[in-house]
Amino acid sequence: MEKEFYVKSPNKVSINLTDKAINITRKGFVNLMNQGLKGDKTIPLKNITAVQLKKPGMTSGYIQFGVLGGNESKGGVFAATQDENTIMFSKKHYNDMVELKGYIEEYIFRDEGSTTIVNAHSGKSAAEQVKELKELLDMDIITKDEFDRKKNELLNL
Image (tube, rainbow, N blue to C red; front, top):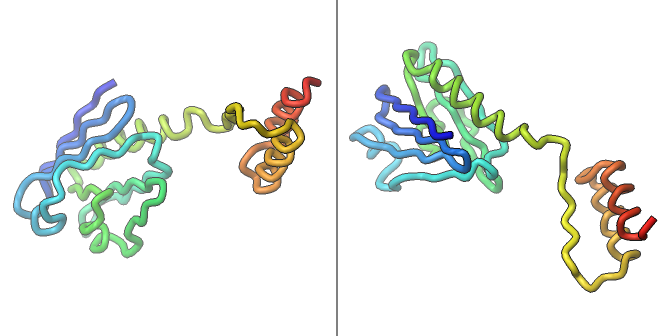
């Protein structure tokens, strides 16, 4: 899948969405003033943890991508203008941004509930690995079913 979105107002931004990433290209004077000379921004879809969409009204709308380890702005529209993971848009681009949000959320939630536990040969005993899995279970990183399945696999049950 490859999808292109182009926002002309209030800033000129080209957004290219592929199966693996979103590429944001900013052009024009307004972007230069708000973002500086940062160049293109590519965000792997696997690193996007959230998408926030603010509908335009009295001010411009924006779509903001929360990323792993990211520090997105929390101060509304005016703070969002400075955030490199945020795209500002006018009313006429709202439907395109809803579509973009839908594509990204579909990717984010596609594998929800199917946590993968990797069993790399680590030299640890089965008991040590089960203990580590129990810690992951206690921290709610894996589910009870995932814990039981992996424990049975490790203990050859």
